[in-house]
Amino acid sequence: MATLEEIRKEITRLDEDLLQLLSRRKTLSIEVARSKQATHRPIRDEHREQELLERLIAQGRPLGLSAYYINQVYRLIIEDSVLSQQAFIQEQLNGQGGDGASIAFLGPVGSYSSLAARKYLSRHVGAIHECSCSTFQDVIQSVESGQVEFGVLPIENTSSGSINEVYDLMQHTSLSIVGELTLPIEHCLLAATETTESHIRTIYAHPQPIQQCSNYLQTRMAEVRLEYCDSSSAAMAKVRELNSPEAAALGSAAGGALFGLMPIAERLANQTDNITRFIVVARKAIDVAMQVPAKTTLILSTAQKAGSLVEALLILRNHDINMTKLESRPIQGNPWEEMFYIDVAANLNDTAMQTALRELNAIARSMKVLGCYPSEDVRPTQLPAYLMPTPL
Ligand SMILES: O=C(O)C(=O)C[C@]1(C(=O)O)C=C[C@@H](O)C=C1
Image (cartoon, rainbow, N blue to C red; front, side):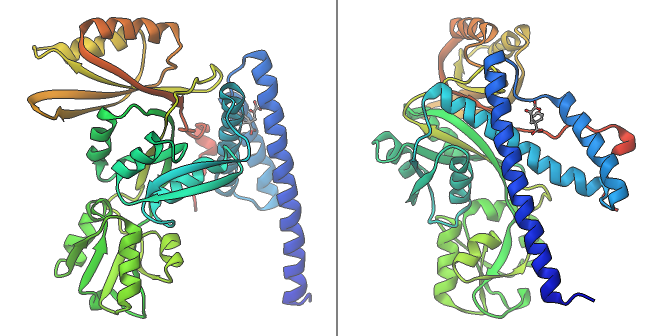
């Protein structure tokens, strides 16, 4: 029988081979992007994805690889392939790319925003210059002043809903939205020393995680004092400094590790799929290639008469433009008046979108396009029912 050392050596060799193969696959997917750019074909081809998954599931079965496993692995591979192709085409169109880029985010390195910033730039450029900010306003100012190229801001979360402060800041900035991305948020209770939930007396956290974990906090930690912090990293830094078995922070396990904190309870969010959507802002608006699925965000204030919002939404419907989000916010200084934020799944340069914008402009009290950007929503291909993989 082979020794553990020998088996591990073999696994290491196989992992190296897998990395080489994944890298070759990625290079080929960029070749595909070049070809699609030349032939004006869309990046996403769900028919091809389905055919590929069905074949791999069938080939994997006799090799002892379950449909669930193949599906999980290939979901990641295809998502990366689609997003890398989109990033490649976008860089060609907008002359971005190059050696490095600078990006501002809320909280020190280790905050959810910093993880989102890294995720966004990992596909776009080489080296990253990171700029930590203590407020959302500082993130916007760092980009407006030219200190950094990009800013990343959380805009909505599947548990706690919209992040109003960011919507309000977007009303007043000249920056454009140039990207979006989603990040799964996995909140843990993090402590600096050996302890258990029942010993915790104070939890330090940013208001967002507190809202997102409200069920857990109300049921399991009802007696515990909550201390609000400016960011999850600030909360983790505080717990590190206190080094007490009675203090804990809410945050990600990865962020906690940077502060030497250990998770004592995991998966705390109200919703099991706790995902935050971030927007990326820059001084200059970008164009989105027609091969890439695009989103456009508008702010609109309508006349104060009955049915004016309905009228605006009907314009979108009449042009077959799919609205993906509608959010209303009060207008500061004008009580009872509302500003509407609208996300649509459309390219700003589409003829239908241009016509709809002209019609909206004619009925709106004011209107501003906040940006048109590639949609990073790569929904997995729907497999036929008989192939639906289950984890069992
Ligand atoms: O074959 C293509 O057209 C590709 O773009 C490659 C690929 C893949 O990575 O396999 C990626 C995206 C498409 O939706 C289908 C398949």
